[in-house]
Structures are given as structure tokens and as C-alpha cells.
Length: 257
Length: 257
Image 1: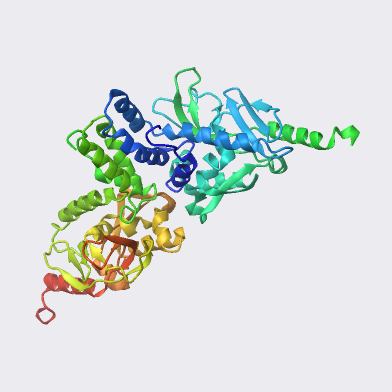
Image 2 (image 1 turned 180 degrees about the horizontal axis):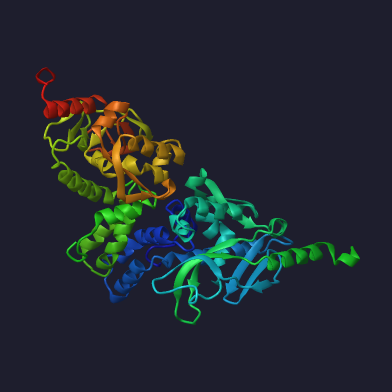
């Protein structure tokens, strides 16, 4: 990083979306674009640490995921400062509990974490090995990536039986509950439409449609790591609870209106 | 190459087709996949030559094109050994002349090289700078790449006004004059159909439809290099001439039948 200077994570993510990454379960194109950027600083540098890092980068096509999550968290941290908003700016899960927060409020609303469906497992692994939905990566779905970018991703389509139409349906389902479209992440097969952006808890409650999350599946046991990937369906009650709370914050309890 | 061992060029090309490369005018994904493969052998190796090569690789997203062309030439060289065939196994152009050969015959059939249409030019360049269709790269169109893989390529779509449907039409147009589909190169947005493979001169003549070639545009002056990219339409007469010759080889001249 000292040699290369700053990396524009979102610009790389935007390129990767046009190359089949949803930038959540699939970050192959983004990782390779990053490798290409760093190559002149890695090659010819000498030193065992550089060689070891290069071997790690070359073998880890999900390397970019962590950078994308951090960038998404920066975006939602900024958005969370908007007061009295119906836009979801936190969405996370820890294997037992699924939680969201709205912009302008520190309060978490939680429900049980879902199982991960539409899954493909690593060889020798199956549903009995997988934990319930887990991790901070669902922040990507709040920033126009993951399920929001599924429509352009053959890898996500593979999770859904292989059809690009099924992947597109995942994106359109998210679009139905979003406030707008990304001006940065464009999907060529959707006529270069922006990916859906800004999950609006009012729309979630109105349609009863929760965000789907394209996600890795971790083993039930700590430390075992990833066993597959699939699509998790966020539970509805935490969204309706958050909307009720927003309503009460804006208008007061029902008996005081 | 000595450090990494053999590279499976066609396997990388197949991955790249699912990542938006047509592997002719666009080889960004393929080049990056190759860089990822080579990274452990480039990093930490030391030496000024390795560093210089790494800088070259990092800055040349068309690096993979030359490898793909050589691999395609190997395939067509094999296919050219099939006797008395109507399948086109050579297709090349030199800026003034466009030529094809059929499998099983050494004879070239030529016509004037076309202008390259549907073009995007580098900044400051335009149609007056571009040579007529030129280069050996059209061999890719004979192997299921280039226009054959256009349907999955946002970069090719940009040459045609931005619509993925226009890129798909280019592929379907080629499919109409091909003998089959690739078992190796699959296009996700076409339901994972193989790319069209094996241009059949009988179909070209029957439909009057020639292969389109997604191609770089070179400057009219030697040594100036690439000024843009576009789509060239192969001239019909060399295909009909080749079919007439095949007919005569198989059945003798008309007056001796």
C-alpha cells in the first residue's frame, strides 16, 4: 500500500460488477483487478514477505471481499448520520441473530438468523455442516452490491440453478424495496441500469419482501471456515419493528398523537 | 514460463468469456487471470527484467490476445487437415485484402478488405486514421471467440451503442452460418449455450451472411499502432468462390459431371 498509493475500492468494484462479480460471494474479477494494480509493486521487489503475500493473493479469489466490506461500512457509517430516516444502514448477523438499524438511530432490531438456502457446498459439505446466516458482509447489500448486483453474476446464477434470469429476479426483488439506484454500479444485462440502493423499511413492510443476501456459509464449528455459499432471506419482523419505532419517534406513541 | 509450467490458454479463455471478454477486442479478464496465475512466479523473484515484464503486463490488458490467437491457430491448423470440408479454417486480412481457406485445401480465396464499422476510436482518432480490416486475429472468430462470444461482452456492446442485445445479435448472426456450438466456451446470458463454432461456407453462401469480426483498428501508417476497435463485415465473394471450388473439387467441372 505504501508503494502503490491509495486504491479506489469502489471503482474496482464497479468494474468487477461488469465482469460477473456480485462483489459478495464472487470477487474474482475485483481481486484480479487489484492484483493487476499491485503487480508492478509486487514483482521484482524481492523479499520473502512479498513472495508469501503474492502466493496468498494468487490463491484467494475472495481477497477483495474484505476491502469491499470495509468500503461499504464507510458508506453506511456516513449515511447513518442522516436523521429520522427509513433507510436501513446496518444489516448484520452472527449465526444466531439477524439485526438491522435505521439511519439516524443507534437502536438495533433483531430476529432469529435464517438458514442459508439456494446453497452450493464445498465437496463433502452439506446443509448439516452450515451455520445459520453469519457475518458483517450483508452491509454490501445496503450499498448496491451482493444481491443488488446478482443480475450480472453467473456465479450467483449457479447458486440458483444456473439461470441468469433467476439471478436477475434476486436483484429486481431487492429493487422493489429500495429507494433508488446506484449511479456507480451498473449492470450491462439490465441495460446498464444502476444496482438497487437504499433499502427502505417502509417498502419492506408494505410488500412483506425482505432483502436477500448472497453470502458465504460458515461451518457450525468455530474456526472451520467456509463450507459453501448461498442466498439468505432476511427475517421480516426486525424490519417491521424498526418501522414502528421510526413512526413512534416521529409522531410519538399512538396514545399521545 | 519455465517457473510456472504450461498455461492452459483455452481454459483461461473459457473463464474470461463468462467475465465479459470476447477474447478478441476485450481480453482484460483473461489477462488478469493469467497475471493471477503467474503472480507467485513474478513476485519476490527479483531482477530488473522481471520488474519490467510485470510493469508491461500490468499496463497491457490485451496481452492475452496474442496467446489466444496462437492457440486458435493451433486449433485451425489441426482442423485444416480434414479433407474436402466446407468449414473455414483460415480467415485473415492485411489491410487491403481479405482471404479465407477451407479445411482440406491450401488455396486462398480473396476479396478487398472491408472498412471497420461500428467503431470506437481512441481520443483524437477517427475513421480517417483507420486502416481497412487488418491482422491475423480473425482466426479467433473461427474458434468460438470474438464475435462468437460477443453476446456476453459489455465491451463489444459498447462498440454497438451500448446494448447487450446488439452484442447478442452479432453472435446469433454468426451462429446462423456455423456448423455447431463450442463445448468449451459457454455464454451465461445465452442460457450457457456454447459459442457458435465452425463457419460453414455453404451456410454463408445460402444466407448471404458473412462472419462479423470484432477487431482492433490499426492506423493507416505502419508503426503507429492501434487507434480504435470495431466490427468488420467479411466480404461475401471469397466465401462463394471457395464454395464453388469445393463443389468442383468434389464433382469435377460442371461440363464433366
